[in-house]
Image (cartoon, rainbow, N blue to C red; front, side):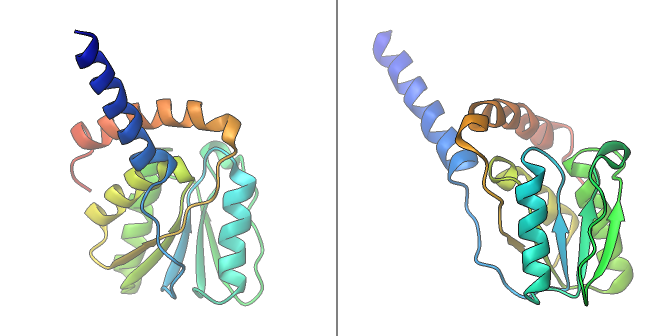
Length: 167
């Protein structure tokens, strides 16, 4: 019984590390638009998304302001910034908004900036809704926030796999 518990615990820790602590990410690539998701450690996400836009990775920045515009809309020189409040006010709403805008404008590539723990789930949701090339460059999450983020992401991943199976 103890061996089963140890194996289960090791499996859980390994899966958490692969999915949420060290998720698959991409080097930045030029895209039609950058999608900045809202969430934990928002200053790091905002700074990374703005930096990528300023460095010319995309001419458009889609900037989620969270529920009730909790994050102010940034201004980025020579970049069209589209600030929005997603409905629903979660990752799935942000992804659906970006996919609708991409279809409307004929975009074939998106560069997404999620939080590190959110990376796997956000990529999965965006790839369900957007048929083009998805590049994911996560913002760092402070070490002290990671246990909360991992616990949250297990629940959010379960919802994404069971409830949000379509776009």
